[in-house]
Amino acid sequence: MQYMLWGILIGSGVLLAFLLLRNRFAIQWLGYACLHVAFAAILLYILNLFSSYTHLELPLNAATIGTVSVLGIPGLAALAALKLFVLA
Image (cartoon, rainbow, N blue to C red; front, side, top):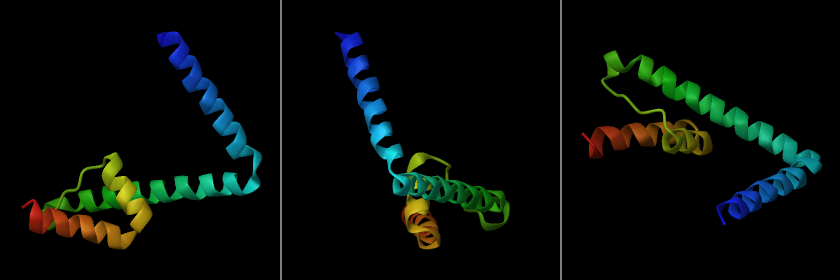
């Protein structure tokens, strides 16, 4: 039973990748998404580098990187405000 579920998961993943990579627009969209995730991780890393001065440290996890990659600098400011005012 478990092999059948893994087979369905792998098969559907291959079909989804085939459908997405068949279109040129999807490849560009995937590149932009990866670029946004990389910039978000870099911004959070730079913020954590200055944590000794600012006393603000945000973790590098999927939720924070996703928030910053979708919302950008305002998302980073929102996470910092949430950390300072709600979780402090």
